[in-house]
Image (cartoon, rainbow, N blue to C red; front, side, top):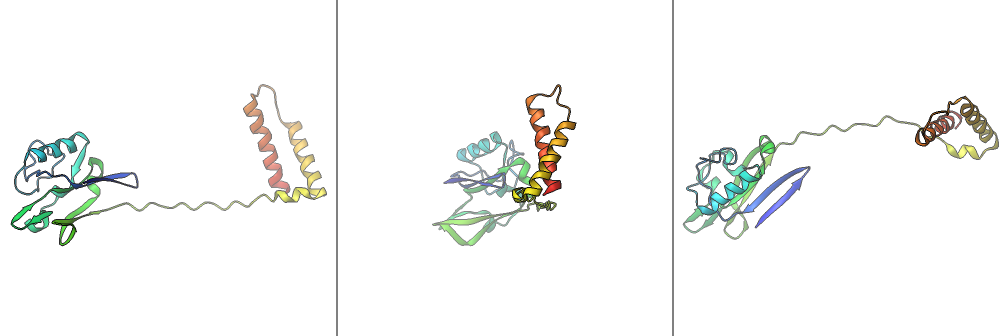
Length: 184
C-alpha cells in the first residue's frame, strides 16, 4: 500500500513498497542517502528508479540507525526494510529524523515508521483597521443632499475626454467612494 499525503503544498509518499533498496547508494546518490539495510533486489531497483524519475529522496536512508531502528518488517527470523517515506528533493532539508518504533505495529508484522520534519512558522499579518463607511446615513435628507452636491462638484471638475469606459467607471467609482467616506 502506498499513500500520497499532501501537506501544506508538500507531498509525502509513504507505504509498503515490497522491495529492498539496500545499504548502497551507488548510481542513486541523489535519491538514496547511503544508510539502508542489507542488499538491493530487483524491486528495490525499481523503487529507486521511480524515486529518481520523480526527483524524490527516500528519507529512511538519510540517517545512520541501529538495525532495530532500520527494519520495518519483522516476521520471526525474517527482518527487512520494505516501508519507505519519500519527499521531494527540495524538501529534504526539512527532514529531521526518520525512525522505526519497534514496539508498535501499524499492521501485522509491520512496525510503525515515523518522520520528523521542521516547518518554518508563517508570519501572520495583521490588517490595518479601516473604519466602515456608514452608508445608512444617506437615508437622512441632509446627508443625502450633501453627498449629491459633493459628487456633482467632483464630477464637474473631472476630465472625461480620452478615457475608455473602464477608466471612466473607475474615476466615477472613486469620486463616489471618496464622497461617501467624507460625508458618512
